[in-house]
Image 1: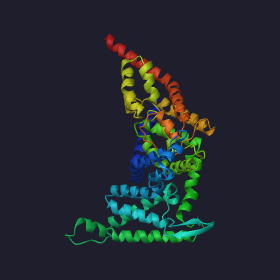
Image 2: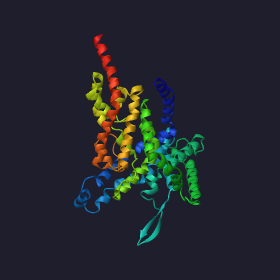
Image 3: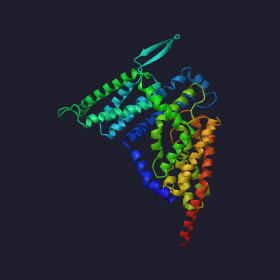
Image 4: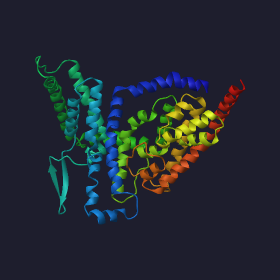
Amino acid sequence: MGSFQEFLEKRFAPFATRLAGQRHLAAIRDGFISFMPFLIIGSLFIIIQDFPAPGWQELQVKWFGEGFNQFIILPKRVTYDIMSIYIVAAISYKLAQSYRLDAFSVAILGIASFVLLSPISTTIDINGTAHEVNRVITVGGWYGTNGILVAIITALIVTEIFNFFVKRNIVIKMPEGVPPAVSRAFSALLPGFCIIVGMLLVRLLFLQTSYQYIHNFIYSIVSLPMQKMVANNLLGAIATVFSISLLWSIGLNGGTIVNGIMRPFWIPLQDANLAAIEAGKIPPNIITEQFFDMVWIGGAGATLGVVFLLMYKARSKQYKELGKLSLLPGLFNINEPIMFGLPVVLNPIGIIPLILAPVVITVINYLAMAFNIVARPTGVIIPWTTPPIIQGFLITGHISGAILQIIDILVVMLVWWPFIKLMDKKKYEEENEGKAI
């Protein structure tokens, strides 16, 4: 155990810290985080449209009329269904800020470049005949979740090209006395022109191929294989929770690091689930980001069960009080009091259940959904602070999701109990020795 602890502290922790601070990964992570509140807003309207209650659809029609169902879903259309446009702007902006560039200009160039690389036409059916309509940016498709990967790549490339020009002073400089806003605008002219021309050439290049657009190319060789091999299977889910728990064991926010890498592959899966729900079908995908939200009951490591053990089973006064103090934060999935107060971080005994418990309930949850015992995630995004059980119900849209989280809490308590008992015994003896002195 000592050598493992030394490896974590001296080898793994410095690497993970560098990875978390890497400029481009940080921009992707922060870009998604900055857009997350708007996805939650869109999700709230999805819940209103498809609230999991018998007769809700008929009641909507009775109260608000036939068109209400499609009207109330419009906030989802302007958040989820054109998400790639927002994401390319957000990541471009964040990365430009890290380089101290004109972030607004770079974000605008990111949007323009993404649209240049994307289809601007669509096909509509009129009386059984297909008609192509040009100069159209569609809601959904490549502008929605399917275009996320191209949006990320575009944002990074546009910002790097802009930075190349600015750092080498290949810009138009205005005379002194010109307002700063005007000067910044003109400094973006030359790099912006070169970026737009470059993206236009890329579009032309792909139009000469069978792919037609870079989206089809990226989706075929990267996104689809990643979804199948890593993002949407049990082994990938186990690897994800293992990685997050391992990072937390050394005090790093594993969710921020791992989710930032995996989120682009999860989002299309949850969007496919949303589309299935809207069509009245069973969601096809088990693994989405919300699947992992159901695992992290009480925070990373699923530590709400630990809180209950400390409150009702600990003999040590310190641990019992820690359990009581951690209950309210734990109910809202905030577990820093447990992670640093027990402590779990850098604790050789605590690291084992911290990693093991989430892996066990990940397997249980996956199999329960795979065998249709429990409803699958609908794709709705809810705030991560939503209390467990309520969270399970909202994520799956079914009471089975709430029941599953109750079972998960009990399983976590079983996994943690031998380790809590060991730590509690030691702490209890220390307290009694202090009284004896």
